[in-house]
Length: 93
Image (cartoon, rainbow, N blue to C red; front, side, top):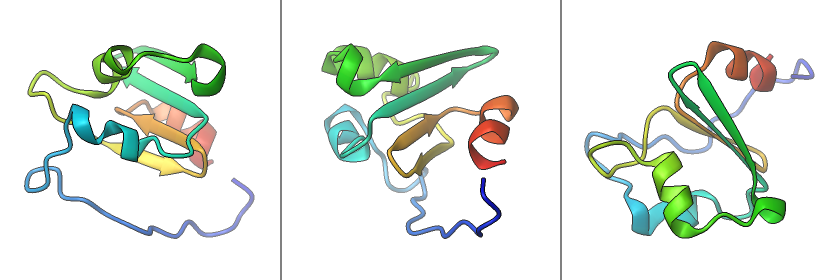
Protein backbone atom coordinates (compact mmCIF):
# COMPACT_ATOMS: atom_id res chain seq x y z
CA UNK A 1 0.00 0.00 0.00
CA UNK A 2 1.04 3.60 0.00
CA UNK A 3 1.35 4.02 3.76
CA UNK A 4 -2.18 5.33 4.29
CA UNK A 5 -4.30 3.57 6.91
CA UNK A 6 -7.03 1.25 5.73
CA UNK A 7 -10.56 2.22 6.68
CA UNK A 8 -12.98 -0.65 7.23
CA UNK A 9 -16.36 0.51 6.00
CA UNK A 10 -18.40 -2.61 6.63
CA UNK A 11 -17.96 -5.89 8.44
CA UNK A 12 -20.38 -8.77 7.99
CA UNK A 13 -20.60 -11.71 10.37
CA UNK A 14 -20.73 -14.64 7.95
CA UNK A 15 -22.08 -16.94 10.67
CA UNK A 16 -25.21 -14.79 11.04
CA UNK A 17 -25.56 -13.05 7.68
CA UNK A 18 -25.33 -15.69 4.96
CA UNK A 19 -24.24 -14.44 1.53
CA UNK A 20 -25.21 -16.86 -1.22
CA UNK A 21 -25.27 -16.98 -5.02
CA UNK A 22 -28.11 -14.46 -5.27
CA UNK A 23 -26.01 -11.89 -3.38
CA UNK A 24 -22.80 -12.13 -5.42
CA UNK A 25 -23.77 -9.42 -7.88
CA UNK A 26 -23.89 -6.96 -4.97
CA UNK A 27 -20.52 -8.14 -3.63
CA UNK A 28 -18.96 -7.59 -7.06
CA UNK A 29 -20.73 -4.28 -7.83
CA UNK A 30 -18.28 -2.01 -9.69
CA UNK A 31 -15.44 -4.54 -9.20
CA UNK A 32 -13.05 -5.11 -12.09
CA UNK A 33 -10.87 -7.85 -10.62
CA UNK A 34 -11.72 -10.98 -8.64
CA UNK A 35 -8.86 -12.82 -6.94
CA UNK A 36 -9.74 -16.21 -5.47
CA UNK A 37 -7.40 -18.27 -3.28
CA UNK A 38 -8.22 -21.94 -2.72
CA UNK A 39 -5.41 -23.66 -0.90
CA UNK A 40 -2.20 -22.88 -2.78
CA UNK A 41 -4.06 -22.15 -6.01
CA UNK A 42 -4.82 -18.50 -6.85
CA UNK A 43 -7.11 -17.55 -9.74
CA UNK A 44 -7.39 -13.97 -10.98
CA UNK A 45 -10.40 -13.02 -13.07
CA UNK A 46 -10.50 -9.74 -15.00
CA UNK A 47 -14.27 -9.27 -14.82
CA UNK A 48 -14.76 -6.86 -17.77
CA UNK A 49 -12.34 -8.75 -20.04
CA UNK A 50 -13.09 -12.38 -19.10
CA UNK A 51 -16.88 -11.89 -18.71
CA UNK A 52 -17.40 -14.93 -16.45
CA UNK A 53 -20.88 -16.42 -16.19
CA UNK A 54 -22.85 -16.28 -12.96
CA UNK A 55 -22.18 -20.02 -12.53
CA UNK A 56 -18.41 -19.52 -12.92
CA UNK A 57 -18.45 -16.70 -10.38
CA UNK A 58 -20.50 -18.76 -7.92
CA UNK A 59 -18.15 -21.74 -8.30
CA UNK A 60 -15.16 -19.51 -7.52
CA UNK A 61 -16.65 -17.52 -4.64
CA UNK A 62 -18.92 -19.96 -2.80
CA UNK A 63 -17.85 -22.71 -0.46
CA UNK A 64 -19.36 -26.19 -0.11
CA UNK A 65 -22.21 -24.82 2.03
CA UNK A 66 -23.29 -22.47 -0.76
CA UNK A 67 -22.19 -19.40 1.18
CA UNK A 68 -19.53 -16.83 0.35
CA UNK A 69 -16.09 -18.11 1.30
CA UNK A 70 -14.24 -16.27 4.02
CA UNK A 71 -12.37 -14.12 4.32
CA UNK A 72 -13.65 -11.88 1.56
CA UNK A 73 -12.20 -8.40 1.24
CA UNK A 74 -13.18 -5.62 -1.11
CA UNK A 75 -10.30 -3.25 -1.79
CA UNK A 76 -11.34 -0.55 -4.22
CA UNK A 77 -12.31 -2.34 -7.44
CA UNK A 78 -10.69 -5.62 -6.38
CA UNK A 79 -12.42 -8.41 -4.48
CA UNK A 80 -10.23 -10.97 -2.69
CA UNK A 81 -11.86 -14.28 -1.71
CA UNK A 82 -10.17 -16.88 0.47
CA UNK A 83 -6.82 -16.51 2.16
CA UNK A 84 -3.37 -16.43 0.65
CA UNK A 85 -0.61 -14.67 2.58
CA UNK A 86 1.11 -13.76 -0.69
CA UNK A 87 -2.01 -12.19 -2.16
CA UNK A 88 -2.77 -10.22 1.01
CA UNK A 89 0.84 -9.02 1.12
CA UNK A 90 0.60 -7.94 -2.54
CA UNK A 91 -2.67 -6.04 -2.10
CA UNK A 92 -2.32 -4.79 1.47
CA UNK A 93 1.43 -4.38 1.71
